[in-house]
Image (tube, rainbow, N blue to C red; front, side, top):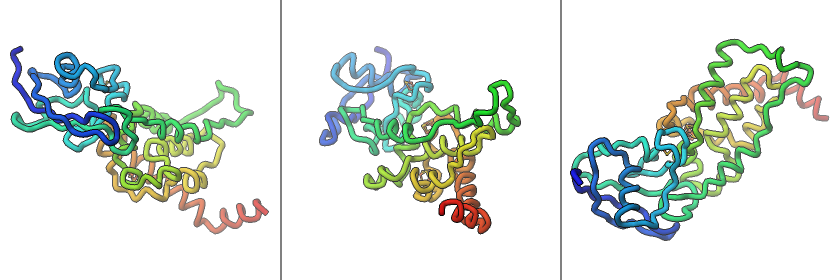
Amino acid sequence: GTGTTRTFRVWRGGGDGELTTYEVEVNEGEVVLDVLHRLQATQTPDLAVRWNCKAGKCGSCSMEINGRPRLSCMTRMSTFAPEETVTVTPMQTFPVIRDLVCDVSYNYAKAREIPSFTPDPGTAPGDFRMRQEDVQRSQEFRKCIECFLCQNVCHVIRDHEENKESFSGPRFLMRVSELEMHPEDTADRRMIAQDEFGLGYCNITKCCTEVCPENIKITDNALIPMKERVAGRRYDPLVWLGSTIGRR
Ligand code: SF4
Ligand code: F3S
Ligand code: FES
């Protein structure tokens, strides 16, 4: 080939695996996923890596590259200094199945726990009315490609496996927030956001927003507004009085 030879360190094996070093050819304009495919073609036919679109849209190729959560199909080799070793590891927050592939079923379990869109049954589909700003808010959140990089980076679960049970993570708190702010959704999601999905664990570090390949402002546009709504529900004394009486 016409490329240069670069040093890659790649995680091989399961959770108890190890980094293995390879010298591999890299050509102008390539992304990290291209290089992993070359490794598969030339040296490591059994290297497990999940990918699909190679266009930053399917969310399959998430991994950690030099310690930073990234889509491997969107990470150009020119990101790194010419002599820099590139270290590729699976997402840390989820169990490794093999090599670069992890078991992300935590995320699907959390998705299933969210009560679905609940419109007023009396409103016919053609009678839905939404302001443009409400449409735009939903559209931003719906750019999510479910790469789970935000879920992977959030310290609440990255550093504390035991929090997984009570914390849904930024992607799914964003979904709860989207539904809560939807003008045609009749469910009150504020208490479950706090009590079932663990919104209170989020201390607004914004690491989720920093890694989102779709540049969704997860913290500012979903999590903080949701926290404000929860605070209104909890601390507005009249609402509190009303709901206390209602429950008795
Ligand atoms: Fe990925 Fe962004 Fe969706 Fe999180 S919100 S899963 S980082 S696209
Ligand atoms: Fe985690 Fe994002 Fe909150 S990284 S702590 S969910 S702002
Ligand atoms: Fe689809 Fe990277 S392969 S996002």
